[in-house]
Length: 160
Image (cartoon, rainbow, N blue to C red; front, top):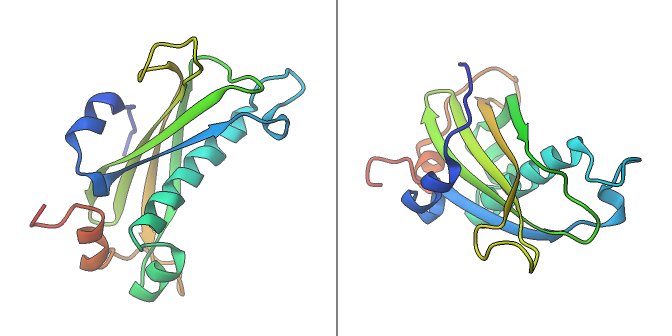
């Protein structure tokens, strides 16, 4: 599946709350590289962190998913970087589950700077990311469809 970055801002307002999550953070010295801006790998860590927080909020953390017989494993990440984040920046990291089809799910992410001098609510776009996740059996590591309870909890069930 070739990934393309969706318009995550449009998607955000149209998705059920169960399919989206956001976190705020402040850039600290531990996030910086020798160029004094947030290292590219940190953006990916932030994306994974907001995805985990989203799953935890819905009661679908790793332990719950293991018990249901399928966990998501990243297959592909695509990140478009627009601007660097700097020490002290206030950053909003959003994730939206955009697709669930069989063995795969796709999450879109946006990373925006929301300093007091930035446009209210919108901020300044720092990066966009998309991750394709494959559901696998936690014991065998083989592909396996997510349980109906998982699909329903994340807002992809037939009643959503």
